[in-house]
Length: 440
Image 1: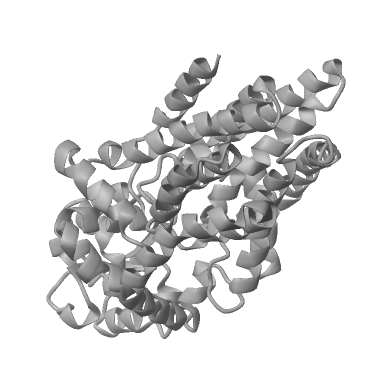
Image 2 (image 1 turned 180 degrees about the horizontal axis):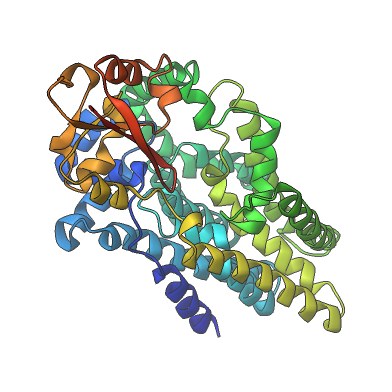
């Protein structure tokens, strides 16, 4: 049965896999293609906010399979499917085989997990490593636990917020925990110079307008975590309808979580799942007052705990109600997932269509950091800054992509219009907004 679930999850993650890369994915592609393995560590990492392991993995993969949208995303698909299997193992060990199957089916169909299993970023890999850590901790396989901890630490800093739960639950094994953490401490000792540079860059970003996009602590960001866990990336323009849907789904999921928590005294390691779900979120909220890390996708690694607890809650119900609640959750998951997979408006920024519409025209970008996606689609030589605009040019395009952050004084627009250009069209390619100007 688990193999059918894995096959189903794999199939879902292949749908719409060739959609346009968005900006961060294009940055990932640029890193993997332009930097050698050593340069990823020495030249790119100091200015980034993540450890280098995912980039190193993707460079090795891409050297063999290329840099197409599908090729870049296949590793995340694989990481996502393997995570489904690990969740099955966790559910089987903490509850029983049936809960393991149900929880893996929930994750296989979960909209948020499908979305990030299709993204050329490190979040699916992070969720896999965290799930492996929890399973290895339960089985007390300390050598593999220690190795997985190092791999996690070299993939994503935020996911290390999982570490305190092992100390809370495994106090009796404190000596083994100390030993298992030594390789991570040693690896970070050598990584410290670059880590300090990244930390400095992160602080600088948090003090700018960019920090608002990265995820400061706010009521909105906190609420988005459970909402996106339940409904994935979809939303509706009618906010009242969306709010009603969230309220209904929340009542169902909340009831199942309550039922699951009531089993804590009778099921060993259930406390581990609850802490896995809660502790990293609380710590992220606190940290985000200083460093902007509170975005729901950065907490994807706690999503498996969410589905494991829901699956446990269904099994505490009478059989006739148990099946009904399982069907309800699968209905929510599949509905939100299908809406994303077949609905372009719920998918990623469409830089590919923007590049096609641009044709041979020049386009002004206020900042260097926005160029990777358009360059990926072969338009890099058409990108100019506002100082390169000449009066003899008849047509010019202007990127309005998060211009409030990169050009808060709107200097690029003012420069274009001061040279006698008139805005004739405005386009929105799924979040990529551009304006077209003509000199009449």
